[in-house]
View 1 (cartoon, one colour):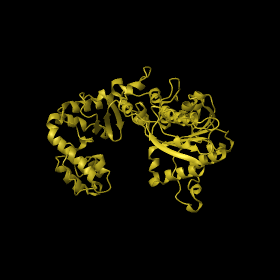
View 2: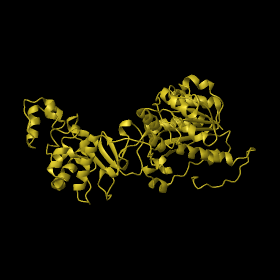
View 3: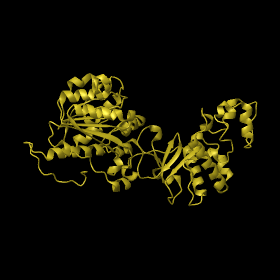
View 4: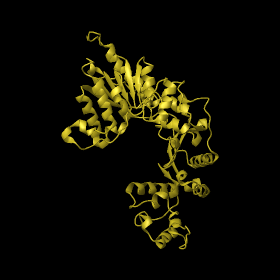
Length: 445
């Protein structure tokens, strides 16, 4: 079948459909760097703004779009659903559907599209497609549910033309496998030719937290999250917040209770630096949840601080504030060496996770470190996590490649959904007579 690839990015839809034998007749994306990668890999020119070309798109049977989720207007109720989507890129999709009436429409977006604007956005999308004569189904799917070590839940919206597909109501999304989801491992995306190292300063931080974990008794897990800035602290949690509103004298008196020496001659900003960042930046009273985190961390130090040692704590105080926060997400695994796991350096601190799957690729700064590999994953490995073929060429610049791959659809997930659409073709003869359906092991009820 012929398909169009709207908001095509680097071609996840293209690879999935073309490897199933379908032909791309039009592609577009506003991002010039994406268009370059698309052309290099698929030998096809992707046009720019869909709004410029929507009237010139060739006839097609499948419309694919990983469209941007712009806020839909709440106004214009007197004009119905069409007015609610005016000015959005989904309006361009509906315009093309109206002009070309494809057999199938396959849309992809962030999972929380379902709850955006208290569910009204999804309700509008569904209603517009139904008014155009389509049977609509949606499902949130993630690559890890298909055995790929990548946790990336996205919503997939399938619309089937009720006039052109007689057995439209028989469509089912692919059955996901709990066994495959639980059995994933990052080693399956490993690329032997990829290179990289961890900076010496970051390696020292990771070694520091390994020392912390190894000093703990085996059955003891650290607080989640671990805020080492609270270890040994005593400042009041009830009557001084927000601390930014306190006078210098009051700030100094509070710190003196903890044995922290400050001088009235210091600037207020310098005195405030003696408080943790999440305290000095607060503009309201201390929330209950934050107070509970703080109390939990303080009690942890009372119970286990002697085992860890004041020397370790003194070294921690010298770290970047972000690196003074720690999250241990591997349970009671035998090894307590941070480098035996997956590490994420996030604004919320150092996060240590199992090696079963990487999180959604969202930013270059959050690309995970695979401890046993001694480096962050490479763009090639990110492409593997998005199920692109081994001959796919990511962008030459890593930061751009990661952003593009993070915005792409996963090829295997698209492949599985499209195969279920093709089941509808296989059980209908040219005369429109239904043929008994053969049940497939991955065909969900």
